[in-house]
Image (tube, rainbow, N blue to C red; front, side, top):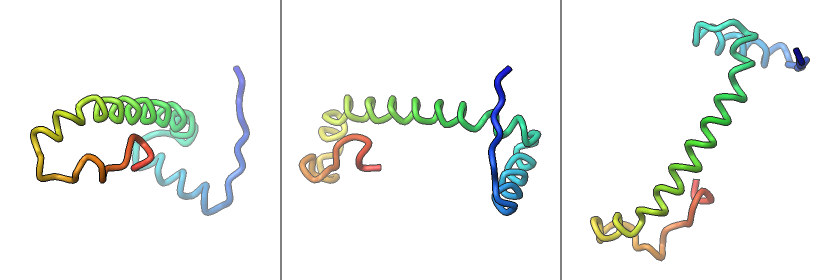
Length: 79
């Protein structure tokens, strides 16, 4: 099975260990899960942005006193 060696400063490694302990995971499991969790987060954000853009007109109709449509930023660039 492929593996990966990652170099951390002492302070970085201590922070990662603390984060792993806070989640009740081993350091190895925590570091393994991070990129998978980030991939899922990005997928969720892409879907949420797409959903928001799809329903923008409904929001504008329901809340006409909110930010004018022309004043809003477009898509994920606003985040």
